[in-house]
Image 1 (cartoon, rainbow, N blue to C red):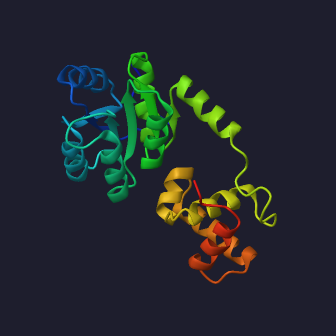
Image 2: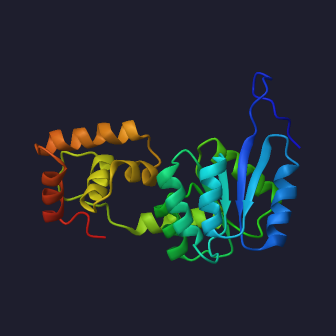
Length: 226
């Protein structure tokens, strides 16, 4: 076990975790695993997505370890609603489903991590710690799938708006798809301030007055259609 001390030896607050899974045995195992770590505190448990939403709002944990498929409300929908109301909470998906639809649905919902059940226990602990620090974490197989997916995609808008940087075109594509700045920040793992700066640069370079004009120009160029 690791000590709960920082780099300078100062005591750090433990990462507070909410465990959301409809299988009691798995919840018990996670509670014992994470509760044994001095830098982690299990703040609560939930047996379905609806309970997870309520518990996250009440407990305000640092991390929610979330199952994907649960009764009542799915882990995807629960993640979306938790992140929408409490964007500082990091959601780590822990599931046995590794299909593209599940992976990318979780990312779009705002999950910061995606692990497959059956990974070594030490990997779960490290993932919780990383997500608690604001990092993104994925199982190796999931990370490879994400890299392969985006490597196979043509650069959005590469032939249009050459005055924009790649990041600015990426943000314009999301604007054209109707996404708000907070959603764009979560999807691209950027700070809200950074997104606002990029959006301002896009408007200036395209010489548009507002978001509506930017959307019209972007959609005419084929962006925002996915």
